[in-house]
Length: 568
Ligand code: NOJ
Image (cartoon, rainbow, N blue to C red):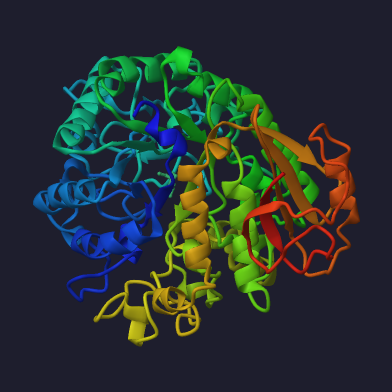
């Protein structure tokens, strides 16, 4: 089917934390194969695998040293081909992670590039001379804190790295680099890959003037507009589309920090022949103080009104002009119920409520491993965190500059560190949650005895079966793919509600995203004020397509984290 990705649901696997098959404590491809029937049962259409290629693992595989070789601890190239085959047998597609803004500094290209200024690979990366005083070429910062430039004595020059110093940025201005990338894409697509999730793809084109950011007091390095959406970005993506993507029946999703819905239109308008969809960060940034030196660790209280405003803006602006990638969780985000909801008394209701509002929207929904069983954030000691982002930020912000106290930093890490989503998958209540028979590479979340797949599969009322039903609805109900979106109760601080409609039908999607019992009148009246033909009679028996509490009509108050979809 053309555009099959529009009514698909994607399941993201973070391979090192998904399932270990050989007892080394590290998830692997045979482990993924063991769980394909589980994913089939859930009903998802596509798996997105975070990077599985050879890598020193400085940033958990987002630092690739050989694009054509599977990292040993994940398995072999043959395992990858077998995984393609086994997934395809079950009607599941497999999308790989394309990390080509940068490579590892251990990639053969970089090993050569750093040797001299006039070798074959010298221009594969971004090398610049120091400023006259010997300092970095400009004040660009790394997303992992500190300068984005690292000095290399062999060349007496600096190289650019938007992430860790072990992740040098590739020079996309060099035709040879782009050709190498297109070749490696074809290499995996010819073996069976069904598409790509493209890591920080909005950063591949850089302003060739390499200008400094304007200075602010108390700050040395900056990240911002020069870090994404550079002048040749769309030209490069169009070229990639022409050279590679257009030749395969594939799916693409670009990770695009710093993008607005207007930028998303450029990426995803089918007429422009670029990508199918992009991941925005706008809704993920609503609980951070903009522009703070403490970056993502500078927390601001969650506002449902703001979340609705941002998500609605994306729904409206991409409708008919592009396509949305819908997500609350991935390997870079904490668990949504711990972040913006309730992960204790109302854990299951809350997980289902967030799932309802997400899967009711227009776009392709993404489920991150463990989200379907309502996994929660983990609270570890600071020295137990594995993520380079946490470790670097601690050194820079707590130890070196003292811009945030250790206490506030710990609170922020518990609330939103990436490691919250990276604890091993909780399969059952046995030791290490059934993830491994060995010692897990990273601590288990200590709630695994209570929250695990075995428990979820045994409980007909679990989050798992709720997700299964949502996914089934996406397959069976064209309205969810095609219908228009119309937000109601925009200013309500507790209710997230909207209508989806086609020429023939209208659905109400609603969730009480609070612990309170709320009278339903405001919701009923808001629907009556729209052009749905509904006369406000709350007695009438609408068709409930899915709900997380028992409910027959719209008279009863909304219970804590109650959510439903009804056909009007
Ligand atoms: C985005 C990835 O999702 C993240 O995990 C990684 O650290 C950066 N890009 C750098 O590759």
